[in-house]
Image 1: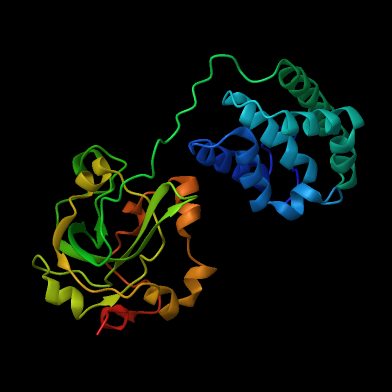
Image 2: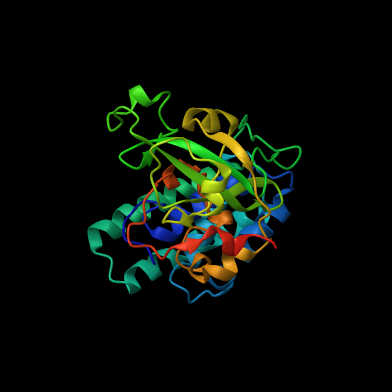
Length: 291
């Protein structure tokens, strides 16, 4: 929490806000509605002048929206008032920022004021979704994927051969889509629950039905290109009960990446393709199935 450097994004809240702004800016909403989403997520900070991140919130939001060409007078005016009143520097002094960093912070604020006074960046291109992102994986779909030392293919590389950590395939993993949704009604995400076992041969639907979830339970995003790069292979569909995985593994609500967070950060499910347990509590696949 709080500011720990001179830069505008020198702090956890500022960095998180930067990603959130980029995510919500893709939604087909006007400036006031976008601001409303940001305020709702950080309501206590946005509305409490005594919160140490209050000034950070308004400065980062005004700058972020403006850089995307989004004209939001309310955010801009709040940020300008914060700069002109000296409240941000006062907060930095209150958290005992050293004098050299304070001077750099003041210079950053002066430059930011000039930018905000000019209004939104001219010619900035904002890519807006015209409809909710289509799902490429269905609830209850089971998948097999090639593994190397228990790890699936990293979709951030164009091919397995381009990944320096990948060797020859030595087994198979399997997973099941136990949850999916649209963050903010538009950004698609999935929870592909990966079995904590490496198979010598390509797994079947019965293997999945009789298996146990391992550690790969965080939600993530997945594009068609990433799907192809991971070489996910559909092997059938099982009747997953809606909400079952959250009932069985309640720590998903607090300790594991949520769907909304995955969509905001655009974290691909490739990081979950780990066909091992790593000490994570195992959950029988059968317990999430209907009937």
